[in-house]
Amino acid sequence: MKANKEIPVKKNEKYTVKVEDLTHEGMGVAKIEGYPLFIENALPGEEMEVKIHKTGKSFGFAKAMKRLTSSQNRVELQDENYTRVGITPLQHMSYPAQLDFKRQQVRNVMQRIAKLPEVPVFETIGMAEPWGYRNKAQIPVRKIDDKLTTGFFRKNSHDVIPMENFKIQDPKIDKAILVVRDIMREFNVKPYNEGPNTGNLRHIIVRRGYYTGEMMIILVTRTPKLFPTSKILPAITEALPEVVSIVQNVNPTRTNTIMGDENIVLWGRDNYRDSLLGNTFEISARSFYQVNPTQTEKLYQTVLDYAELTGEETVIDAYCGIGTISLSLAKAAKQVYGIEMIEAAVENAKNNAEINEIDNVTFETGLAEEVMLQWSDEDMKADLVVVDPPRKGLEPSFIEAVVKMQPTKMIYVSCNPATLARDLALLNEGGYSVEKIQPVDLFPQTHHVESVTLLVKK
Image 1 (cartoon, helix red, strand yellow):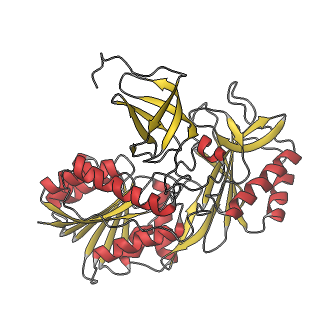
Image 2: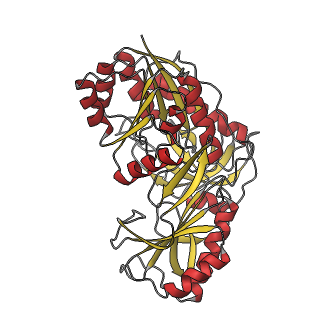
Image 3: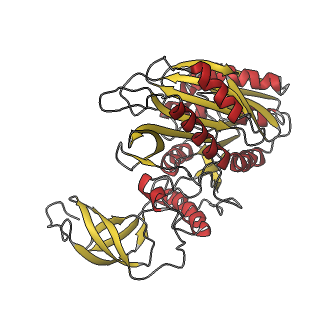
């Protein structure tokens, strides 16, 4: 709509609307005189009474006040607080509908951004039980009603809503958060106060191995002082015998970033272990490790299926992290080269190769695009390039390096359909045919979707 057109709704007024569509974040879309309104907890086909709470020139936001009709895809909410804090924005949608929605997100960007609507996008691979899947929790700590309290931030705010059961986390992690919280209360540890940047305990982070049961507790503090550790540590290890590591992370700055740069191992190891597709991995406090282990195995198995390795191939795994995909590929390839910018992750990856007695993999520290350009300039050849980049996708220079190196195949693991589609369009122009895309649901009850794409040199 034109910017100078009068907005047809007024803030704080109520209207009756029919929801027509969903945004890529799962919000309902209704229109009044062509003016889009975005509505939480709304599904296509539903009629509802809404109250306008924000208007802009091109669109507004409304709150559902009363639902007049319900979609067949609607299910009962587990807890309204989960929507308020934003951890389960799709909890009102049936799980089959969530899987369809995620597949459609990928199809939409393939048509709109990549201009490749003919590429097959398969049905999303889902979970049998789409709750209690997260193997990592990062829980803020604040003072509420004069008590050290754990919970989660209300959306778009710094206000903590007290919560004890997060539903999407491993229940044993939820229990561990409460155990640590109560120990901190017992020994009068001061919770962080964000305004004046005072107090000490900012976050409790718990990571747990799905297959091993090993647990790591990370206490994020404002200062290196944490008293009385001589009492806190035995209290934690006695209450939680599966704990193998307690780490203090120091973050002294006023920031939204959860962890700081300094880690102090207070007790036990500096890592915990878990396994994926038969390989064992050591995971340190700051290591990236997928949060949904059972679905990660399906994701990586799709990579292996698409790779169709015979044992004769040279493979490059860019953005390799601690080597999870690299080591899976190495079992079926001649040689694998992993690239990762975080030095600690590369050390983890090398240790993980040793633990699993895999010797046909080499890890290089550096930016993926710079290392790839260097290797392509040195006329290095690869049969397969696998990428698993962050949400921002691939750098143009990385794509240039792939096109120059001319691998027979490329497999793109993506956590962001929009940047995936942008990069696939560039790779297609560079001589790679986009063959097929398999979405995988690693984050049930949220709008996020992972996918695996196979590209073949034309």
